[in-house]
Length: 251
Image (cartoon, rainbow, N blue to C red; front, side, top):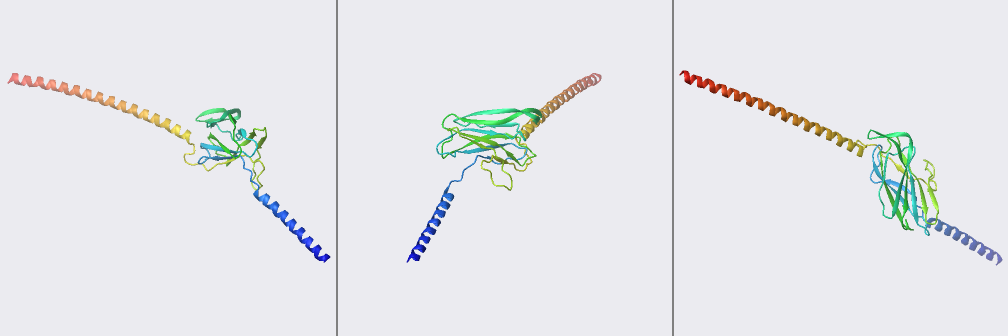
């Protein structure tokens, strides 16, 4: 009888332990995966070209909203042109810094570039359960890189600061707070984008102007030739008339 009770107690203990393990597993599986600040292009981000990229910022707190977002642009691959898109409810500050090595854009040297863009909420910001996209027009993208790392800083209304600055490394687990990484695609035939379009337009304008100029010159030359021919014809007509008069008189 006593042996039966001991066996029964052991069975209950095992069941309790199994239930505890199962409960832990359920909690682990049901825990929400934390979202990260990420960057994705609208379309493609080709090497040497221009692109619009969206920084997606989720709110990960239930008791606070995101009121400030800072995105640092890569210093090892500076981008000459950076333009933010206005967003209702957010003030935007663009910070520029001097470059160690000037860039050349459209034939002009640039000795400073945008190093940071900061969005600050006018109102509630990004509330719990929501996310916000922050678009930037950037270019020209580097031709000697496969990706660009943008370190970001997220500030909440309760003064908590989350730094998304850890650079993911190939072959290793994703860090706890990974920095947004923009993957660059291969360059295309018209990868210079807007710059090429502007240069082409300028060349087209010059060609058109030259063509108009040549056309005007040709018209002037034709008019002059016709004028000279008219004069010669007129003189010939007068001479013919004089000779005809003399012949009649002699007759």
